[in-house]
Picture 1 (tube, one colour):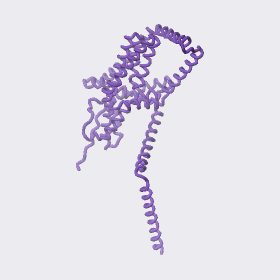
Picture 2 (cartoon, helix red, strand yellow):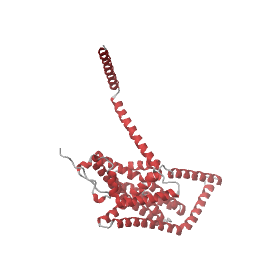
Picture 3 (cartoon, helix red, strand yellow):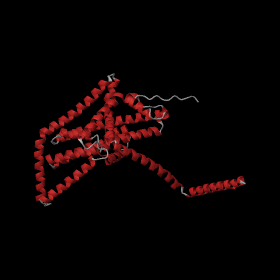
Picture 4 (cartoon, helix red, strand yellow):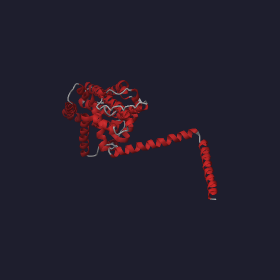
Length: 397
């Protein structure tokens, strides 16, 4: 009796399941194909966006570690051409490290000393000339066709100063700002130096340990993708150094021949600012034009503007496409977008690291998507800090 009761009950359950499948199939088929595809893309996009958001949140929380790490990686890429040359010519590694770091500090310190020396030599005359020019411009606003009163001028100046302070605060207080205290900056500098020493001393061991964190089947792909990305960062740093030197030389020579004071400090600022794409060139160029305006007058400032725009056009239309385009393989439009996106998200550090990070991600993605490691073409180890990760042996079929 119980068996006869279970059979109809089981048949009923099976019938309900079949009916449910039919209804589900009918509902699925009633949804347009385009909507199903869009839905599939949408939930995957939401998952990816959530993962990126978590990653950005972690970076923000660990900003005092992430920023020094990125600075050390970028500096090591800048030092690598000379460092690798010394290693290939059988310099002891410790000696190559000392020469690279001490030489870099000497060059940067010498440039800053030269800039400070010229500022101290010409500051009094620049200050007096600036005050005189500002007074003349103020009298022009009062006695000229605008007919402004001194109170109106003071009010406009206060508003302009408040706007500049607000924008500067927004720029300097990005999500990845190194810190708000001198202690944070000093700690970040010391940590960057320590990480740089570790990378130069044992970059191969660090990379080999990182690769071993991945499954064995994917280690060759990870190793090749990382090497390709690292070569791209080296090419970016090398090319950016050349472009910054050309920009600084051109603008400093223009300021010198036009009689604009502080030509050497202008060149140093342009050189350092060129490492922040787009933003650095605009800010340092505007500073050179402003200095020419307040010291030499509007006509010299106009010619200084012509020099700055000419150098930047040479960089943007000749140097960047020929050098940077082939070095990082990123379209100029993408460079502008990632720079401003990085500045909005992370302030000055975001603008500084946006292009090399985008170039690294682009090369790694293309390398993995094309399965380049299977063709046997691997980046030459002579151009890398990292040690070679052996390929897994294939078992015979």
